[in-house]
Image (cartoon, rainbow, N blue to C red; front, side, top):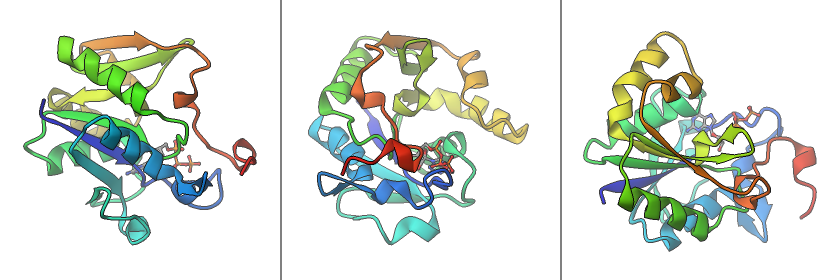
Length: 189
Ligand SMILES: Nc1nc2c(ncn2[C@@H]2O[C@H](COP(=O)(O)OP(=O)(O)OP(=O)(O)O)[C@@H](O)[C@H]2O)c(=O)[nH]1
């Protein structure tokens, strides 16, 4: 399977107050949990999508950096940049960099779905919420994403109306989906 793991790690962290992808859980920066989940599930091509300002703070031995040509345009823009820069890749497994409880089992489950079925997107759903920052995208999404970005639409939702999606239901309390947005979300260690 021609697939890359893309860790989205170029956000502003404005609600958190400092770059949250470098906060520590068990002594390890958050972004490495996403990198390691990909790696331990057997993905060989792993990329960290970020901007020039944050770039030097990542360990480049764990994943190659993908630098955006225009920073802080949000995750949909970051995905389009990854698809444009990695021209030989067909599938893009996206994970945020603020999900310290993500597991290799989650990544493995998603990859097993991809082996059996190849829609445009494989997307988890918990409760009534889809999880676009834990999903697998086919390169076929790129023209629609570009069209949306050109009309200044930055949400994943309009994309979902226009492509084929396989939604995979996970338990509502599954820890893989817990993301850290504010300081109050992270006071344990
Ligand atoms: N590469 C890249 N990643 C992004 C961008 N915006 C958000 N992300 C990542 O996407 C994930 C979810 O981001 P959010 O928490 O919604 O946004 P944020 O900008 O990081 O934080 P806030 O400023 O508090 O909204 C995080 O892992 C971010 O690092 C972006 O413009 N480029």
